[in-house]
Length: 466
Image 1 (cartoon, rainbow, N blue to C red):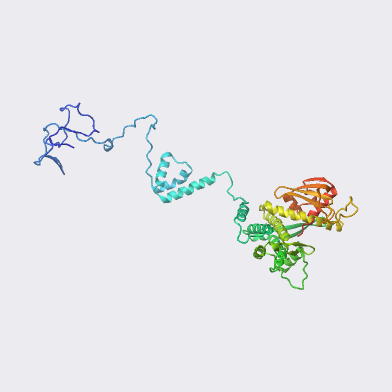
Image 2: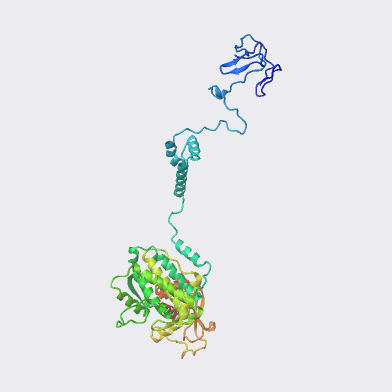
């Protein structure tokens, strides 16, 4: 910018020109020495009279702007090295076509691109949404390939999720405490059966129980086991006023025992049971829990006949929960699937039921001549009096201690009259009571009267049935 008739002024970005001589300074073409009358035309500078200025005019007062080195086409000078700064400028991104950049995404995800290629790909990902999605998927795939743990789901995931659901907020109409074990075990078995195909439903299963000190087996299928649970759970359903699943002809004799009902239900089917048996079993288990919940805690004393003995409803529900867990384990073994024991609070109640049933089982074996007689007393202990006792110690989850009267079911257990001590793991004791473990192999620790210990172990195995 210049002023008319004034002294020269120049941009501060230019070099100082005071050291230059007037005669050494080259006048640019078209320079107007008058300044005030010149104008810039489309064809170049000209004087006010339309004539171009002559080369002999006076020296210029101000230099013309210098041209930038970037506009000359010449190479840029090397960057000045500054301490702490990189020695060379960052590489410029490559100019590549879209198809080439897309083909580099796999190498970029594996961090195998050259620096220039990496810069070009990352700059492209900011502009192309399709390539950005593809790059994200490739990166996620690379992370999966680098994981040290297996990609298979945890086989216990379903059980843990189910347990978490069962421990949530209680329902508006709560399930009685004595029915929660049955509710949980039927739900766990139902979850196990959910994804079974036809091959799993027809997988062979061998039921095992003890009878007269010998292990007995019965071959069936997964569907046959569910039919067995359906028929025996029908004892509880009938006690609650629900329909009996066992619908056979009246002239067909049916033993009122769990084994008799199961055989009758199996015979009533003209074809092997299939996955269709799951629906009635599931609906019946839901109906039992729902009816027991509406009936309230007072219904726990309703009698449930088992043929040669009966149990109150609260104990019958524990018995059915125990058998549901045991047979669910049989099914899981048949299809090679892991299955966890019940929750500790439910396992404790199942062990407690078995421990309370042991005195009657001992008395029944003694009447049948299968248990050793009392050699230390001349007569049975009167009802309500303390007598010989065995301390049953259950270790692990759901464990505890129980004193078992040995001489009479009506005798009082007494620590002062303790003659033997047996220690077992909780799950192992349940497997013994289910007939899955021989009595000779069950006890982890024994101390005291060997005959009494043997009687209690065999009495626990005699609790098992089909």
